Length: 207
Image (cartoon, rainbow, N blue to C red; front, side, top):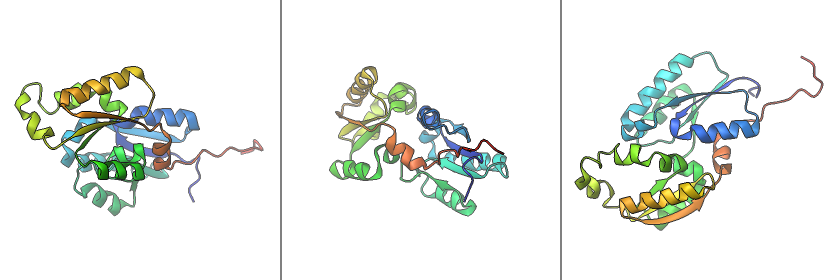
């Protein structure tokens, strides 16, 4: 069993950085190191496995454990193939929405309405950059139907309670011309999915 004082490297999507940092501070994960990849890769998911592979190569032999903070994220199983060959675990689920909400709740939301577009705190803050400009809707608004024609609602999975983020999330749904629903998740489901051990302490104060 790994000594929880040993360094852990978390390689993940920058969309998770704020939440991981908050959990590390709350839980005293001083043994955790992080390497963040651009959130824009979600618009080019075929590039995610290669980007993760480069980080793994750079980190080889330096850490007791490496955790990859991605879902499948549209890689079509290629990320799992890469990690399986190296014996490295990733977060459970197809997308970050599953481990933010908890797998059971996410499955219920999907069964209730498959045509759901999900927002997190990060996506609300970066909606224009990643969705509107990232998908080219600012330049080609006629593409709206192609991207969102099969969606029926927006569900905002909120990691924090913020009136300003909630108001902005409603605006995002209006921009997409979709119904809006709010679900507060907090950080507990995400912390559980990470499964990072609390650092051990030495009550005796010895070496």
